[in-house]
Length: 245
Ligand code: APR
Image (cartoon, rainbow, N blue to C red; front, side, top):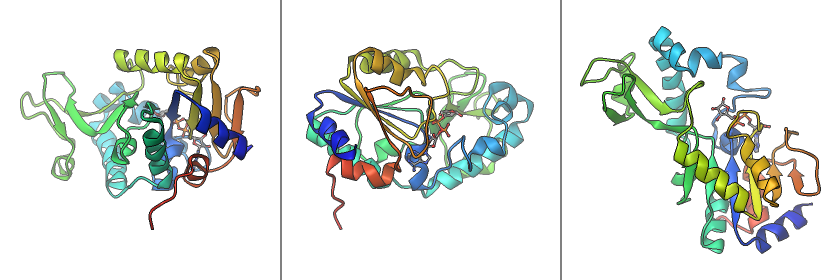
Protein backbone atom coordinates (compact mmCIF):
# COMPACT_ATOMS: atom_id res chain seq x y z
CA UNK A 1 0.00 0.00 0.00
CA UNK A 2 2.73 2.46 0.99
CA UNK A 3 4.99 1.43 -1.90
CA UNK A 4 2.07 1.76 -4.31
CA UNK A 5 1.28 5.24 -2.97
CA UNK A 6 4.95 6.29 -3.20
CA UNK A 7 5.05 5.05 -6.81
CA UNK A 8 1.86 6.98 -7.69
CA UNK A 9 3.38 10.14 -6.20
CA UNK A 10 6.63 9.61 -8.14
CA UNK A 11 4.73 9.07 -11.40
CA UNK A 12 2.09 11.82 -11.02
CA UNK A 13 2.39 14.72 -13.47
CA UNK A 14 0.16 17.28 -11.71
CA UNK A 15 -0.47 16.37 -8.06
CA UNK A 16 -2.42 18.63 -5.69
CA UNK A 17 -2.43 18.58 -1.87
CA UNK A 18 -5.60 19.09 0.18
CA UNK A 19 -5.03 19.45 3.94
CA UNK A 20 -6.95 19.87 7.19
CA UNK A 21 -6.25 20.30 10.89
CA UNK A 22 -4.66 16.85 11.21
CA UNK A 23 -1.78 18.09 9.03
CA UNK A 24 -0.75 20.36 11.92
CA UNK A 25 -1.44 17.90 14.73
CA UNK A 26 2.23 16.81 15.03
CA UNK A 27 3.24 20.47 15.11
CA UNK A 28 1.16 20.80 18.28
CA UNK A 29 -2.05 22.33 16.90
CA UNK A 30 -5.28 20.70 18.04
CA UNK A 31 -7.86 19.34 15.61
CA UNK A 32 -11.54 20.31 15.73
CA UNK A 33 -13.15 16.85 15.77
CA UNK A 34 -12.24 13.45 17.08
CA UNK A 35 -11.14 12.46 20.59
CA UNK A 36 -9.16 15.59 21.52
CA UNK A 37 -11.02 17.94 19.14
CA UNK A 38 -11.66 21.58 20.08
CA UNK A 39 -15.36 21.25 19.25
CA UNK A 40 -15.75 18.73 22.08
CA UNK A 41 -15.10 21.56 24.57
CA UNK A 42 -16.27 24.63 22.71
CA UNK A 43 -19.26 25.48 20.51
CA UNK A 44 -18.29 26.51 16.96
CA UNK A 45 -21.42 28.69 16.68
CA UNK A 46 -20.39 30.60 19.82
CA UNK A 47 -16.69 30.89 18.98
CA UNK A 48 -16.37 30.81 15.23
CA UNK A 49 -19.31 32.85 13.90
CA UNK A 50 -19.96 36.57 13.33
CA UNK A 51 -23.06 36.46 15.57
CA UNK A 52 -21.03 34.79 18.33
CA UNK A 53 -18.27 37.42 18.00
CA UNK A 54 -20.75 40.32 18.16
CA UNK A 55 -22.65 38.68 21.08
CA UNK A 56 -19.59 38.06 23.23
CA UNK A 57 -16.37 39.56 21.79
CA UNK A 58 -14.48 39.02 25.08
CA UNK A 59 -15.16 35.26 25.03
CA UNK A 60 -14.33 34.88 21.33
CA UNK A 61 -11.11 36.91 21.55
CA UNK A 62 -9.99 35.04 24.64
CA UNK A 63 -10.41 31.83 22.65
CA UNK A 64 -8.45 33.14 19.68
CA UNK A 65 -5.80 34.50 22.02
CA UNK A 66 -5.41 30.97 23.43
CA UNK A 67 -5.12 29.51 19.92
CA UNK A 68 -2.76 32.24 18.69
CA UNK A 69 -0.51 31.91 21.73
CA UNK A 70 -0.60 28.13 21.31
CA UNK A 71 0.23 28.67 17.64
CA UNK A 72 3.02 31.19 18.33
CA UNK A 73 5.69 28.56 19.00
CA UNK A 74 4.37 26.09 16.48
CA UNK A 75 6.76 25.07 13.69
CA UNK A 76 6.23 22.84 10.65
CA UNK A 77 6.99 19.13 11.29
CA UNK A 78 8.96 16.98 8.78
CA UNK A 79 5.74 16.17 6.87
CA UNK A 80 5.54 19.82 5.81
CA UNK A 81 9.15 19.78 4.59
CA UNK A 82 8.43 16.56 2.71
CA UNK A 83 5.77 18.48 0.76
CA UNK A 84 8.29 21.26 0.02
CA UNK A 85 10.72 18.57 -1.19
CA UNK A 86 7.95 17.16 -3.44
CA UNK A 87 7.24 20.70 -4.72
CA UNK A 88 10.94 20.95 -5.74
CA UNK A 89 10.84 17.50 -7.39
CA UNK A 90 7.68 18.31 -9.38
CA UNK A 91 8.51 21.99 -10.02
CA UNK A 92 5.03 22.94 -8.74
CA UNK A 93 2.69 21.65 -6.03
CA UNK A 94 -0.59 23.51 -5.40
CA UNK A 95 -1.68 23.18 -1.76
CA UNK A 96 -5.34 23.71 -0.89
CA UNK A 97 -5.67 24.00 2.88
CA UNK A 98 -8.49 24.44 5.37
CA UNK A 99 -5.94 25.45 7.98
CA UNK A 100 -5.39 29.04 9.10
CA UNK A 101 -2.03 28.53 10.83
CA UNK A 102 0.18 29.43 7.88
CA UNK A 103 2.45 26.38 8.33
CA UNK A 104 2.46 25.31 4.67
CA UNK A 105 3.92 28.68 3.65
CA UNK A 106 6.26 28.69 6.63
CA UNK A 107 7.71 25.36 5.40
CA UNK A 108 8.31 26.79 1.91
CA UNK A 109 5.22 25.85 -0.11
CA UNK A 110 4.67 28.65 -2.60
CA UNK A 111 1.23 28.03 -4.12
CA UNK A 112 -1.06 27.80 -1.06
CA UNK A 113 -4.80 28.45 -1.16
CA UNK A 114 -6.12 29.20 2.34
CA UNK A 115 -9.80 28.36 1.94
CA UNK A 116 -10.65 29.39 5.50
CA UNK A 117 -8.41 32.48 5.63
CA UNK A 118 -5.56 33.16 8.03
CA UNK A 119 -5.34 33.55 11.81
CA UNK A 120 -2.28 35.82 11.43
CA UNK A 121 -4.22 39.02 10.64
CA UNK A 122 -7.38 40.79 11.85
CA UNK A 123 -9.62 43.48 10.33
CA UNK A 124 -12.48 45.82 11.28
CA UNK A 125 -15.74 43.90 11.81
CA UNK A 126 -17.62 46.83 10.21
CA UNK A 127 -15.35 46.61 7.11
CA UNK A 128 -14.14 50.24 7.45
CA UNK A 129 -10.94 49.12 5.71
CA UNK A 130 -8.60 48.70 8.68
CA UNK A 131 -6.54 45.52 8.75
CA UNK A 132 -3.50 44.53 10.83
CA UNK A 133 -1.03 41.74 11.56
CA UNK A 134 -2.11 40.14 14.86
CA UNK A 135 0.62 40.89 17.40
CA UNK A 136 0.85 40.16 21.10
CA UNK A 137 0.16 43.78 22.14
CA UNK A 138 -3.03 43.72 20.03
CA UNK A 139 -4.01 40.58 21.85
CA UNK A 140 -3.59 42.30 25.21
CA UNK A 141 -6.50 44.60 24.34
CA UNK A 142 -9.59 42.65 25.19
CA UNK A 143 -11.12 42.61 22.56
CA UNK A 144 -8.89 44.50 20.09
CA UNK A 145 -10.69 47.51 18.55
CA UNK A 146 -10.34 49.31 15.25
CA UNK A 147 -8.23 52.50 15.72
CA UNK A 148 -10.08 54.12 12.81
CA UNK A 149 -13.72 53.61 13.78
CA UNK A 150 -13.74 51.99 17.23
CA UNK A 151 -15.57 48.82 16.15
CA UNK A 152 -14.16 45.49 17.34
CA UNK A 153 -11.64 43.65 15.16
CA UNK A 154 -12.29 40.20 13.79
CA UNK A 155 -9.72 37.51 12.94
CA UNK A 156 -9.33 37.17 9.13
CA UNK A 157 -10.58 33.61 9.07
CA UNK A 158 -13.80 32.51 7.38
CA UNK A 159 -16.33 32.27 10.21
CA UNK A 160 -19.26 29.85 10.13
CA UNK A 161 -22.02 31.26 7.96
CA UNK A 162 -19.61 33.34 5.85
CA UNK A 163 -18.80 32.58 2.21
CA UNK A 164 -15.33 31.29 1.32
CA UNK A 165 -13.19 33.68 -0.80
CA UNK A 166 -14.82 33.12 -4.24
CA UNK A 167 -11.63 33.20 -6.33
CA UNK A 168 -9.87 30.81 -3.92
CA UNK A 169 -12.65 28.25 -3.87
CA UNK A 170 -13.21 28.32 -7.63
CA UNK A 171 -9.47 27.93 -8.38
CA UNK A 172 -9.32 25.09 -5.83
CA UNK A 173 -12.14 23.23 -7.54
CA UNK A 174 -10.52 23.78 -10.94
CA UNK A 175 -7.23 22.35 -9.69
CA UNK A 176 -9.07 19.40 -8.12
CA UNK A 177 -10.93 18.60 -11.33
CA UNK A 178 -7.74 18.81 -13.39
CA UNK A 179 -5.20 16.97 -11.21
CA UNK A 180 -4.14 13.34 -11.72
CA UNK A 181 -3.40 12.77 -8.03
CA UNK A 182 -4.68 14.40 -4.83
CA UNK A 183 -2.92 13.83 -1.51
CA UNK A 184 -5.65 14.39 1.12
CA UNK A 185 -4.04 14.91 4.53
CA UNK A 186 -5.56 15.23 8.01
CA UNK A 187 -9.15 16.17 7.27
CA UNK A 188 -12.46 14.64 8.38
CA UNK A 189 -13.96 15.79 5.03
CA UNK A 190 -17.07 17.13 6.79
CA UNK A 191 -17.18 20.91 6.27
CA UNK A 192 -18.55 22.01 2.89
CA UNK A 193 -17.79 23.48 0.38
CA UNK A 194 -14.15 22.59 1.19
CA UNK A 195 -15.12 18.95 1.78
CA UNK A 196 -16.28 18.69 -1.85
CA UNK A 197 -12.73 19.15 -3.18
CA UNK A 198 -11.58 15.52 -2.93
CA UNK A 199 -14.86 14.41 -4.54
CA UNK A 200 -14.25 16.86 -7.41
CA UNK A 201 -10.80 15.30 -7.87
CA UNK A 202 -12.34 11.81 -8.05
CA UNK A 203 -14.92 13.02 -10.57
CA UNK A 204 -12.08 14.46 -12.63
CA UNK A 205 -10.48 10.99 -12.77
CA UNK A 206 -7.75 11.56 -10.15
CA UNK A 207 -6.47 8.99 -7.70
CA UNK A 208 -6.61 10.00 -4.04
CA UNK A 209 -3.99 9.12 -1.46
CA UNK A 210 -5.57 9.79 1.93
CA UNK A 211 -3.35 10.18 5.00
CA UNK A 212 -5.41 9.91 8.18
CA UNK A 213 -5.16 7.51 11.13
CA UNK A 214 -8.95 7.10 11.14
CA UNK A 215 -11.61 6.43 8.51
CA UNK A 216 -13.36 9.46 6.98
CA UNK A 217 -16.23 10.29 4.60
CA UNK A 218 -14.07 9.45 1.58
CA UNK A 219 -15.58 6.56 -0.38
CA UNK A 220 -14.11 3.06 -0.57
CA UNK A 221 -12.99 2.84 -4.18
CA UNK A 222 -10.10 1.61 -6.31
CA UNK A 223 -9.19 5.27 -6.78
CA UNK A 224 -8.83 5.97 -3.04
CA UNK A 225 -5.76 4.64 -1.22
CA UNK A 226 -6.17 5.29 2.49
CA UNK A 227 -3.02 5.18 4.58
CA UNK A 228 -3.90 5.01 8.26
CA UNK A 229 -0.74 6.74 9.43
CA UNK A 230 0.21 10.18 10.81
CA UNK A 231 1.19 12.89 8.33
CA UNK A 232 4.54 13.73 9.96
CA UNK A 233 5.60 10.08 9.94
CA UNK A 234 4.50 8.94 6.49
CA UNK A 235 4.94 11.96 4.19
CA UNK A 236 8.78 11.72 4.30
CA UNK A 237 8.49 7.99 3.45
CA UNK A 238 6.06 8.60 0.56
CA UNK A 239 8.12 11.41 -0.96
CA UNK A 240 11.63 10.13 -0.24
CA UNK A 241 12.36 13.28 1.78
CA UNK A 242 15.34 12.89 4.15
CA UNK A 243 15.64 15.43 6.97
CA UNK A 244 19.08 17.12 7.11
CA UNK A 245 20.41 16.20 10.58
N1 APR B 1 -1.96 12.99 10.71
C1 APR B 1 -2.99 12.93 9.82
N2 APR B 1 -4.30 13.09 10.17
C2 APR B 1 -4.56 13.31 11.48
C3 APR B 1 -3.54 13.38 12.47
C4 APR B 1 -2.20 13.21 12.03
N3 APR B 1 -1.17 13.24 12.91
N4 APR B 1 -4.13 13.61 13.69
C5 APR B 1 -5.46 13.70 13.46
N5 APR B 1 -5.72 13.51 12.15
C6 APR B 1 -7.02 13.53 11.46
C7 APR B 1 -8.21 13.16 12.32
O1 APR B 1 -8.42 11.77 12.29
C8 APR B 1 -9.35 13.91 11.61
O2 APR B 1 -9.97 13.08 10.64
O3 APR B 1 -7.26 14.87 11.07
C9 APR B 1 -8.65 15.07 10.90
C10 APR B 1 -9.01 16.43 11.47
O4 APR B 1 -10.39 16.62 11.23
P1 APR B 1 -11.09 17.98 11.78
O5 APR B 1 -10.66 18.21 13.18
O6 APR B 1 -12.54 17.87 11.45
O7 APR B 1 -10.41 19.12 10.93
P2 APR B 1 -10.77 19.59 9.43
O8 APR B 1 -11.20 18.44 8.59
O9 APR B 1 -9.63 20.39 8.97
O10 APR B 1 -12.04 20.56 9.70
C11 APR B 1 -12.47 21.34 8.64
O11 APR B 1 -13.92 22.54 10.18
O12 APR B 1 -14.29 23.63 12.19
C12 APR B 1 -13.99 23.81 10.86
O13 APR B 1 -12.87 25.68 10.01
C13 APR B 1 -12.65 24.48 10.69
O14 APR B 1 -11.10 24.22 8.83
C14 APR B 1 -11.86 23.51 9.81
C15 APR B 1 -12.95 22.67 9.16
